[in-house]
Length: 548
Picture 1 (cartoon, helix red, strand yellow):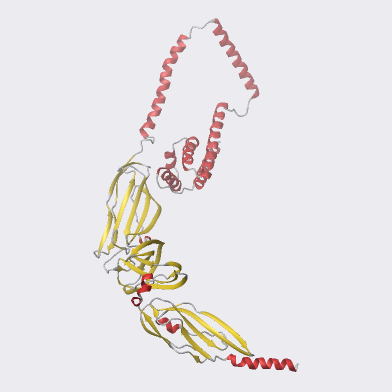
Picture 2 (cartoon, rainbow, N blue to C red; picture 1 turned 135 degrees about the vertical axis):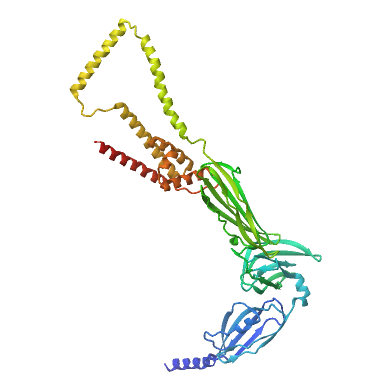
């Protein structure tokens, strides 16, 4: 027991000096360093450190710093134990000059400040020829929210083993990478370089003077049989951001060029009632993103129903410019004959070249809507009874002639006639004996049963087409069903229905005859048709009950 206590006391006595920090040092692995070249800053404490870290926020004012990594070690030599903790971080300077890394303090121990010399890239021509970065901004004069294309090119003159490049940065600005990087080869001053090109979309959000900090490259290249660390930094670009003019009204659209075009299908200025017209707008603009393109609002016109279709937006980079395009389509369905004028469309935008408000316009267009020649007209419907009434007259004229010719009958004819009368009397006697309670018209019942069967079959086929989503088949079966069930055309039947039913049928017609397909809920439309059929049966039943 005494021996164990003595051993613990010795270990505690040896470890007691290690609980305090004996010395705190700071060092860098390179001095001087190049502009844009990362160097390693190491802070080491000899002694026991319990969860403490040096404050490195002071060096962030003049340098770009990376994350801090921590490591510790413990050694026992000849019964003497020592501990050490070190912190390392990557540091880089964007500008040349003489800098001082301040002293650090932990638990009362302080390190010595470090005088660091940062050399401009021009002082090292050999490194500059191996790896360098170029930057370009187009256009160089910008308004608030105007999109500019920032191009970065990395030139590498040796075999690249590892590479890492940070994106550019700008205060109060949005920077987005565009597409994938491109790789090719160029020859400069008789030397072949591998060129990696990246493009960024830059959009300033506030007006004023700003600086776009260039990207920073760090990597390793092969030189002979060894690896060599290389680095490069892109030049910074100063840019003046102009504010939105006070006299501008509407959605802010800064651009070098805006074009608004339209297409009609069909192209004729004369259309038939119920025939859909597809109107497609194409809006193209330079120097803005696709999200900035405003929606095109088509004003309503009395006598037309307008159905918007999906809108497609795209953007690309070409010849150092950002090009955005929006394609929007609308279906116009004329409802009644007449002459209509679709109003002019005007879209304001700000020309950044001449610094003036301009308008992208589409002129007004006059359209003549004519009646559908395939639909039944009222005069035609009135002429049919006259034709029917004339037929019995003609038959009545010919029938007397036929009877007159058959007036001379032989004895065989008279015998057959007498036998027919006899059978008729026998049938009449049997009928009087049975006295049926309710006479049944077999011919009418059979025709009604057949008609009901056809209506039921059409209704089932209509439901099947609705479930399959077949718009064309559904519309054909609907016309047949209406003619069988209600004994009238689809147009006259629709005039008696609710606005909801007419709206759904109009969408279905627009879907069938328009180039831009729309979604039509056929199942809901089928259920509404079934409700109309049930309601008509209920009304018929109530009317029969009143007769009795």
